[in-house]
Figure (cartoon, rainbow, N blue to C red):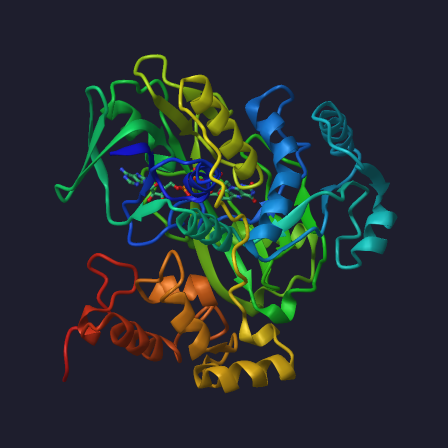
Length: 475
Ligand SMILES: Cc1cc2nc3c(=O)[nH]c(=O)nc-3n(C[C@H](O)[C@H](O)[C@H](O)COP(=O)(O)OP(=O)(O)OC[C@H]3O[C@@H](n4cnc5c(N)ncnc54)[C@H](O)[C@@H]3O)c2cc1C
């Protein structure tokens, strides 16, 4: 019997699990996929938003404003790649300038510090590549960039190191609410717990329906991106936005926490959260609007395109509250942007709700907030590299040449909480396959390591769990 069951191992479920591991509780985290961070938390802009954009007095405004510093602190503790690079919102001409003032005033109401409105020339001094047409800009120094899936992996890993149980491939299909919650998976497995937290992202309304408390409908909205080679990573240093529209924050141009350049996202309603296709139309839109901000952005250096799906809701705000219909059930739904920026603040808010509805919280004296650095070989100096190779020769074998990832790091990814189970899992943990060749060279070696480490046949190795086997047999 668990004290708390959390459904959904995205950045929100992961952070809630980590916060709960500060207490003496038996907690499990259920995830329908073969790994964590496969929903919205995998494919997004990775921006730590400054907090000027949400409507004042909404949950989004409060938790974004509070969440930024909390997220920087957590990223440090968890050894997640991030940078406080600041952001800029550009106005093109007199028509858009009042919007900059409006965003500034909204930011002041939301309690955001150190923002300033600068002229087009001042903006170009800071960012020489931006358009000559820019007439004004809002400068927000507190904004940043972070790797969203590394953050989720680290939050879940740290929660597991502190006692949380992660159960993968557990798709919640029914929830019986008697004295406790009896939760069943599609494959007929079951877990039982006293409290239930719904962090199922785009599927949270389905979970709400299972307990007879569906008062919201999630509207999936897709966002398409283009990722450019690291050669372009220094095109801009700030995250560059255009003034937002009804559809969202517009097309941004930003360096990523790993040193690439990211363009996007679009904002289009989609039929299914599983539809992660990129389209010619979408990428054309991304290119056109990225060029509006940075006319010479080198879109020929694109190494991949991808799509993420937001879980939006008509109210426009996050839904984070205890159920009014069933006991001991908390909805954490409609967490679209700025959910990543707010994730630690959201997790703390959820713990407060649980406390208010009767969960007893006794401090876990063994809780350790630090997650060991995953030790990227490419970042080590020559002495460190020598020392590592002497201790473990696997660090001397470079498997992914584009991103300089050694076998040692891959073996570590197959052993560290939450362990990589498939080829994409190794990719997200080590960056093997994220470079220019996108895994063309290293994938067979990664498959060999997974097979060896798990004592399985190569034909059983999958790209991303379930039926995604990469080989069908020997020719
Ligand atoms: C295009 C785009 C751009 C964005 N940009 C930013 C940004 O720059 N900054 C920012 O702050 N925010 C941004 N966001 C928002 C941010 O990504 C989300 O707020 C955050 O990832 C939400 O996390 P989550 O854990 O709620 O959802 P998810 O990451 O989707 O996690 C939900 C999990 O629940 C699992 N699940 C679903 N149903 C079940 C079930 N029945 N049983 C078990 N498990 C289940 C899913 O597999 C998934 O892993 C962006 C989002 C998108 C899509």
